[in-house]
Image (cartoon, rainbow, N blue to C red; front, side):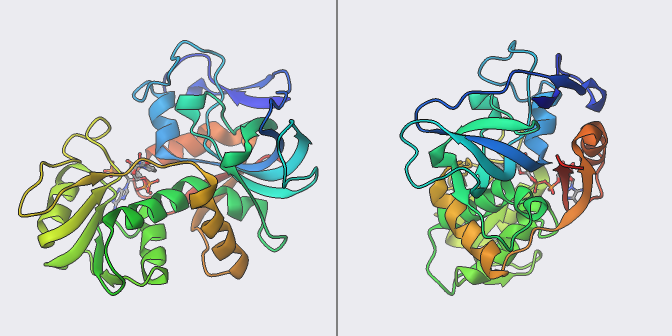
Length: 287
Ligand SMILES: NC(=O)c1ccc[n+]([C@@H]2O[C@H](COP(=O)([O-])OP(=O)(O)OC[C@H]3O[C@@H](n4cnc5c(N)ncnc54)[C@H](OP(=O)(O)O)[C@@H]3O)[C@@H](O)[C@H]2O)c1
């Protein structure tokens, strides 16, 4: 199969195209023909050697968390899916070492949901990591409907998704400079995290998706009756299914900065590394 691989950590120039054996689905896995994937800051972190996979020396390595495509083959114990099903999937790449920037990936059923015919592969490929992180972070606040929630970068990929999802979950979206909010989500870290924390009223809720191992300053000690929560993407069907439903209903649309062919992954990473974009870089594997 065709794949975009890295053989060492480094800048965006480390990618190259390669021909690798097609994976075989094990029990509980689906072989997915990936029609589109997308890039995320975590991929840039792994590529640069800043976020180390569980087995950091395992080259050649395929990066990528997000996938949309069709079921090509089924391993045993994959009830509920059939060959040809349109699907959206997530792969926690640094942990599993299964990346999505390839023609195929074998992924556990628990990381795959079906995709409605009306949703394009390029749209769905922009959604899994940002949508599920946004949803998990809103849920992590554990606030009742009607609560006011501040998101400290509503133009970022996860932030924009959280800002769209907040009203769908019954929250009132607060302005980024609001004070005394019931809850805040930090999607940027450092001084931005500090500012979001200080905007929460005493006894309120605060969650960050930017842990201090990634950007120092993203997590705080409990203070003023607020216990900070660090959100890690759960990468499972439970969090993907509502996103697939909202995509099908047309109430959720990820903002896409550019759609590039898989061969242009280095360009996608270069642009991801350059501040100023406000949407996702999607890779069209059929282009
Ligand atoms: N915990 C999890 O499971 C999880 C899941 C997904 C993402 N994340 C993390 O969450 C953060 C946000 O992810 P994302 O996908 O939504 O990325 P994003 O914020 O859309 O884009 C990140 C890049 O854009 C820059 N940027 C963002 N907003 C900007 C602004 N207003 N002005 C100038 N530059 C800006 C960032 O610079 P700065 O570095 O200066 O902000 C960074 O270089 C990342 O740190 C990512 O690693 C965590």
